[in-house]
Length: 273
Image 1 (tube, rainbow, N blue to C red):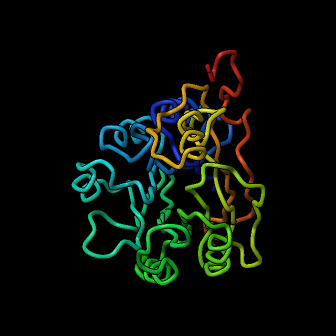
Image 2 (tube, helix red, strand yellow; image 1 turned 90 degrees about the vertical axis):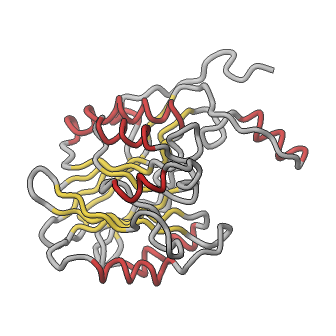
């Protein structure tokens, strides 16, 4: 089977780009399922229920999240009721929602999603490696295709998770840094690995945000209000070819600009003085 997974969706531009690309990706790439990390889809930080509903109704089949999932107060109740959205499994109890979800494709294949959050340079929550083990133990035995979204900052921690789960899951895909990496590989045990999927959001930008506010914070050391960039949006992610009988990955490749038919240009006056 073939699965597409999009990187962090950033604000309205990212939502629109993902929604515009979804039917094209499914049709032209023959995707059986399209997933995405949606934790920044509402205003550039967090995920509101209405944004999640729009994405899930518009072609994204399943949503993962990360450290910003709690930004909007109403998301807690939504996490408890939506079966196509997961939050990191290693948040301490009691936390709304679930860290593991199973989606059944139109062809009847069950695909499990496990969401984890890293601890290096991030909040010191529960151990993601132990949480990963618990998540796999909780899955029905007949679920062979398992995708892990590891929302983490450090490449070393992400790589370690890849080897920790190699041969036990179909893919370990990094999110959070919004910058696609060039290390897509199928590990020796048959697990596809990528340090970061990138983002669906404006570019040029600083991780989807207007660079001016980011520069102000770096140069002055003082807080600065971040706003989503008005640049044209890009769609980034990966495509996985997986043996649905064994759960092993045959191949992984990055989504290209042409795959998503997305705008990717610099316009005069994009960053006015």
